[in-house]
Image 1 (spheres, rainbow, N blue to C red):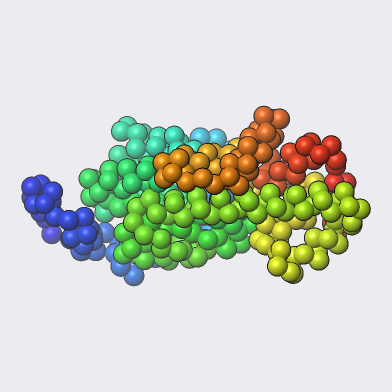
Image 2: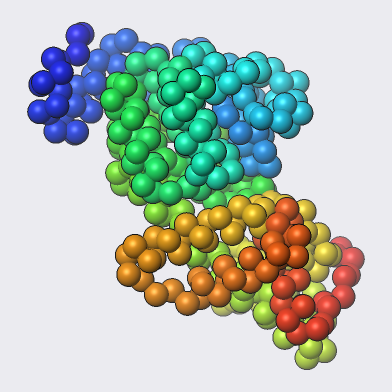
Length: 338
């Protein structure tokens, strides 16, 4: 089925053109509706850090052929040992893939690995291919990527995730998807291997949902560590305190994921402070653009920035308790968590 002439393509609404191209791709692409299987869909994966390594591993275990790229090759070795092929650039990954996932550090990294005209994934992707960016990034960049992909007769979905390293390992992530709803549904066999996908709307809406999620987490984590500091200063057994509140109204996913880690002084990253500072900075920029005043968000970002200033940016977000301990000149004593 040939593409409509350029002038007609420009006159079509995005939804009409998307429907046209979807029909075309269903006739010519392996990733047509209800047909994504390991036997007909090749996967590319860019970014094999704390989260990406586990997420990609689920696809390999399900039998998909996966090609990976990471700037630090050693971080991809586990996946290579599982059977993944190593590529030397994002472009090379895309040239061998029908669907390319990315989960990298910063918006600048997203732009480079996807949109660089020579080495970027989009430049190597065939017509009908799909880019899925799972990095927490800027909504405007998600919209830009979607437009660039559409220009090349490809698809793009912004699909950042929440759930931390345990959610990634256990395939229990919450996935916030923005883009064409039909495309998101087509990708469900892949998303379901990593968690639960939630369609949030058009391109960029997945990122907006994730940023709202980060705002919620920031205030929740601040409340958790302040409660621990208060309980400690009041002479309570902080372990018993956490157990008591975890089943009441103060219970939260933050307590479930990080309560014991904080008590045992385990600050290994499920999610890096550096990346959280980045996320909260994007949130604040969006608030300024929207004319929103969110003082809790601003306070949390300042406290996390203080961790970064103390050289603690590579710790996990639960290290926020260190900032509150310094402010109050106290230390919640480490205990052995049974």
